Image (cartoon, rainbow over all chains, first blue to last red; front, side):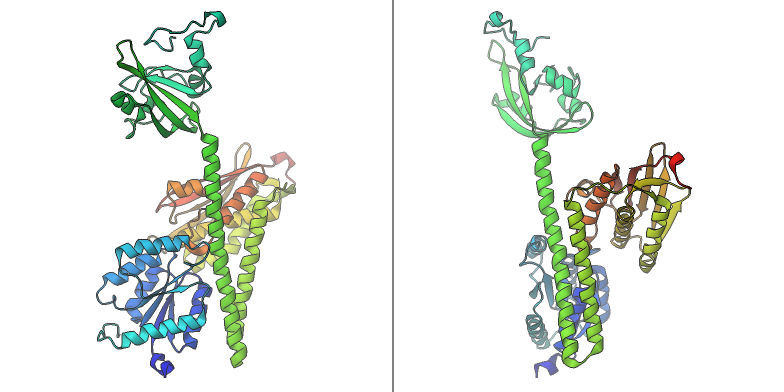
Amino acid sequence: MENSTTTSKKVLVVDDEKDVSVYLSRVLEEGGFRTTCAADGEEALRAVERERPDLITMDLSMPKLSGVRSYQTLRSRPDLASIPVIFVTGITGIGGARDTERFYRTRRQVPPPDGFIAKPIDPEKVIDLARKLTSARREEPVTLCKT
Amino acid sequence: MTALAYEQPTHDFSAANLSSERLFDAVPYWITIQDRDLRVVNASARLIADFGNHLGEQCYVAYKNRTEPCSECPLQRTFEDGQEHTSQEALFDARGMPRHVLAKTAPVRNHAGEIAAVMKVFVDVTEIRTLQNELAGLGQLIGEIAHDAKNILDGLQGGIYIVNLGFGKGNQEDIRVGWGMIQRNVGRLSSMLMDMLYCAKKRSPRRMPVSLPVALREAVELFTPRARQFHIDLQLKAADEVEILGEPEQIHKLISNLICNAIDACRADPEKQGAHCIVAAVSRDELDAIIEVEDNGIGVDTATRNGMFTNGTTTKGSAGSGLGLLLSQKVASEHGGAITVRSEQGKGSVFTVRLPARHPKSVIS
């Protein structure tokens, strides 16, 4: 039943590492989602305008416009602010300090994101989280995200 | 020269023929005596030897190339409260080289007990600071490498996941895509480890004649498709033959790293999208062969530029660990040369490699 409710949901996967994008997309497709990808923050904002996704997974460290900045922009736009955003981060591992710092800096300026996916990616957790966030959103009266 | 002109000697050193002036100059530290206008009224011989004679000049002009006093001046504070104060400062010596110092100030009083001058003693901690910077840089480099390795692991894990899906469903396309990811990331891991090993090892390169125009042309041809993919105009400027003695594979790697870096710097710059240009040139002067790779990409600020060859600082976002530039510098140095960079944020960078040129008479035609 859950599968059927998520079949039409669209996820925008934002990551400058192509292999991570492919991996996450494939995981989400296995969970019944449709996916589209963006390779940096600027491309992501254009894709959000165009695709109006039901969920966004956002890498934090990216060239051009970082995930944090893109997230801030999304949250500042009333028509886009309700789209759930998941940060994809190496926050729990060695070398994740940079991402952690950016996250905490963000937390002081804007509300926290709707969820985190820590690398290495756990496919089951990703699907569970994506279903939870898109299901919750279905019940909201907001219809701004429809194209 | 009277070292302490503001008070009479209080000890008799006549037996050892030691005047206060000689004692002052014998102290193994840099010392200045300064007045309320911050002018240097006296300086120890060692300070004059290393920094030049700046008696009568203000300290911030003489030793710091500044036009105004420093915001936190321990000397002024000592004049104000009569207490000793310490500071960490960077001075420029007579050769223009930065010297990091720990400085301590103390009041010099006249007979009436008034502060007539302030003595400032400097301890040179440049070597300690250099070591600190190198250690900090090493930590940063390890972090960058770990980040890169994590991305590779993600790619491998993703490849395995998709291959497994393919086997489970009998889907050849999934197997092809997943296997491609595994191959690509094994390649990246292998390349990263080889770069790390190269950076860690001391070695002397073989000395074979290497034609730089040929090496540059090969690298440009190799990267032209990638440059075109991102609408970057990659140009080659190599007229006459310029040869060096060295290891062809390593020279190829050095040039490839610089071009690859330039492409990434252009990609990271959205402002000039479609108008990016990279020029790879080779020339020579009296002594050196000169390779220049110039791009009009994103450029870097001074701090990033300073860290480029010590801690793997990169302009690539998450696309690279910055190991490439460290490796390039190592290759250049092992061939008796060096790399320098000029860069301006938002405008672009020029990497210049100078290597000892092979004498034209010995060039094999």
